[in-house]
Length: 157
Image 1 (cartoon, rainbow, N blue to C red):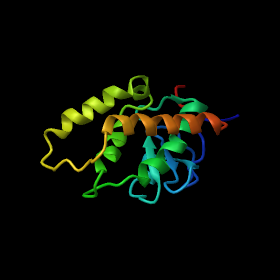
Image 2 (spheres, rainbow, N blue to C red; image 1 turned 30 degrees about the horizontal axis):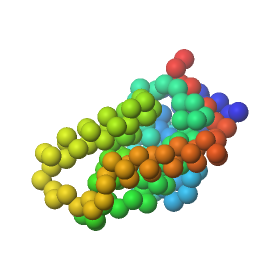
Image 3 (tube, rainbow, N blue to C red; image 1 turned 135 degrees about the vertical axis):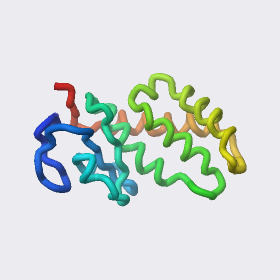
């Protein structure tokens, strides 16, 4: 199993990562991890899904497998002013406190619903948001278990 830690080379500038908030890069069209970079190198790169480790900590191979499967699914959902955009926004909120948010994903859903009340946008979701959220989350977790990554990230030391 590959272990990524401090002094790992940035995928963009090829210099070692010594401090800061390392950023994981994921493809948005297929389930692969593109690399890891400095937060400043990843800024403004819109062709990848980015997960910034804030604060730098530890991600197991299972957690990385989840993110690898998560990003293509997130980017395939409708957004902006499209119908059913709420599911994408709800999944985006799940990332704010990842991996702790997976301990109780319903808390993220409730937080999204509470915040949405204060938005000035019309509700465009035409299905059952809770059922679709849980179904998609379950699908992502199942595929992540079936196709594990052999990468572990440890920035604790």
